[in-house]
Amino acid sequence: MAAALLMASASFAQVNVTYKVDITDYLTATTLGPNGIRIGGNFGAQGATVGANAMVDWNPDNEFSAMTQEGATNTWSITVTYPSAAIGTEHQYKFINSTWAPTGDNEGRDSTSTIGTDGCGTDDGGGNINRTILIPSTDQTFIFCWNKCLQCDGSPAGFELVGSTVNFSVFPNPTADVANVEFNVAAPSEVSIEVYNALGQRVAVNNLGEMLPGSYKQTLNMETAVAGIYFVKMNVGGKSSTSRLSIAK
Image (cartoon, rainbow, N blue to C red; front, side):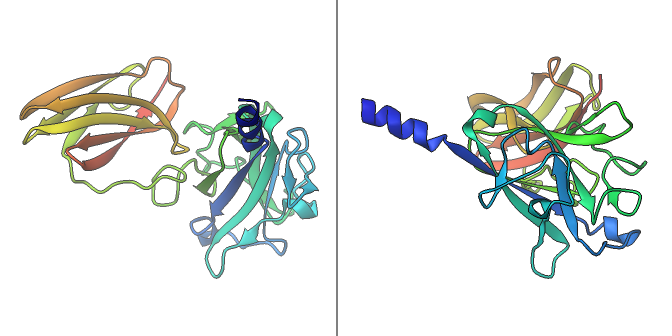
């Protein structure tokens, strides 16, 4: 028993989070600065490191805040390691073009930014919108479009939208509390409904079991969900489709 507990503890000694940002859309109206894309946040307070090197709070000019371009793409990435003590705590950060404004540019400072309204950002009270996540307990990768909570194709971060193979509708949309899901079952099938947030994390699941052919309506209680963008995934008989749902408070 002692050995088992020791192994379990060691597996949570640290967690790696890979942050990626796609600047394809951003570059249509902006030039990439000479220092590339960087990341800033309260990394020092979280005890975060990059390659065993300590990160510094809100200092994207620090060498360990530099992100790496992925080949010839417009995606930049960095892998940050957090100690076990940071797991489950709120972390604030943002992506920066080259260096701090005014000579550079950072997210959340102009009208094109939706990170403050789509559920992955918060206003720091000084006119800046910072991204927020709860540091996960397992290694994860998040990819965002610059100034957005989603990927540039409109799908949630780190989550692939499934093509339309199941016909269903979600209404009202937006909603403040309750959403209805209407769908059809053509043959006896296992049915489930999943809800994901903008980070691609599953926040709710309703396993309905095997259902007979017919038309159905299920209710999603979103009363306790924070405002932002969510995705409803409808699974019927091994086929799936995903629809966007806005929660407005």
